Image 1 (cartoon, rainbow, N blue to C red):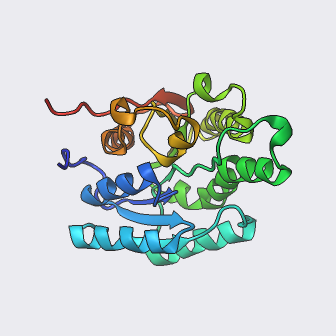
Image 2 (image 1 turned 60 degrees about the vertical axis):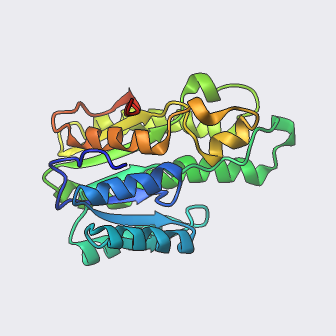
Length: 248
């Protein structure tokens, strides 16, 4: 069952990084319902195509697909992304970072070097560089958002979480730093801390867990849209994301 349509977002263009993930795919659909043109960024083209078809079938504004593997992308790739968005969409009003790279719990002395590098790059360095390339577009918007999904430090800053935990701490620091830097601009930066959520990522860490009590992406996506609707939202803050209550 669909929830209420978010108001005040129609006509905007929003880039969702990690569009075909558990939360990303639901978020894209809710943005489409609200009249947002969504730029679907992910590394799995078949999943992006299915999401594109679902959005078109729903009557949402025609989305844009941008397949990109963040692991191998560099600054020039992000510059090309920004140029393609400007040419194809005319501008950009927001970025939502919901991409996550996590292979599973592993001891420090057993983690291959390439896994450390991949986790730090995909979860932290790549979002920073991508946002940097898109900032000139965001600054042209009358009001723009950079929203960054964060895991709970109490949950991940523990044994065996490795590069994922380091990247999450870095993402939170980046939200505060970038928010301070853009305080006097039209770009608002917010981190949203996710509660335990049903997703393949969580299953890799808590594989014996009964997921029935966990929040679903469908319950959390409306709260992300609600953040976008808060025009006077302070920038550079990390906020706890509350799930939409299940119907009785």
